[in-house]
Image 1 (cartoon, helix red, strand yellow):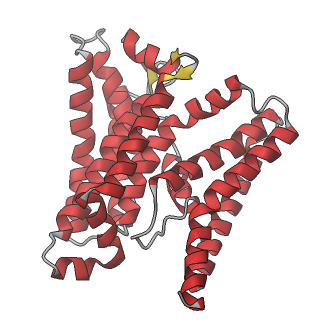
Image 2 (image 1 turned 180 degrees about the vertical axis):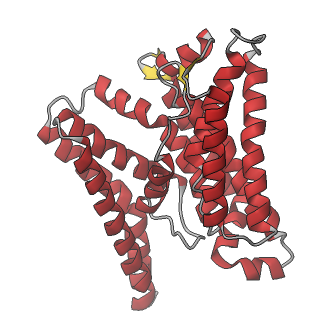
Length: 319
């Protein structure tokens, strides 16, 4: 291997391993700053609080890999939270069974993704504009359904899932890990995953090779909204559906992907690094809470981290 090829390989490996290195450094620093950080309870609390974000961020990764963006994930998650709670609530109508409520909620949420995906893939509308409109519409429908009130989740299994644990491992963390493994396997070992990445790398070349690229682009928005359904239900940790939940979740999901090394132009990104990105953001917030720091500096630090991550990506690409 020549020197140029060796240098490219080195920087590519460094870029891929950077999120893991940053996470390790943050864990060490946090452990020094606060002795309660590495307790089992705090670690599981950190994972539980970010389990919904992990699921939604993996859906965002699928969209970003095609070169798109989805600003509606937080609103669709809130819509799913409200609709799911309403269907299970038996005060004004007959309560739905848990499987039926989930399937119907998922189908309605995926309807948003189907419309957005069609407009982006087949009508060639800008993803930013379409998902911005979807973000407004989904949040509005959530408020209409709930009448701007919280709706108790009248199902003991859902409440047990959101609050319970198995040998101290929260059920929500187990589900988030399962979704992570599934997405990682799909992107790494399936034809679908390879085409999703290829579309983001060079859609024209893939289309000329006979692949229906528009279908793949549309599909990632549908997958994203399906994961938003799961994430929205997981975010209902207080046992209620609320149209106000998940505000700003789209920004956290995008930030997690970018910090994990995903390229906003498409074609590059991995599930494991996206997971690292979510944990980095969650860890920063967690240690600041333990240090009793006001929430506003957290937003400043998140912004700085995103800028640094993008700069490092650009440096690696130029090399």
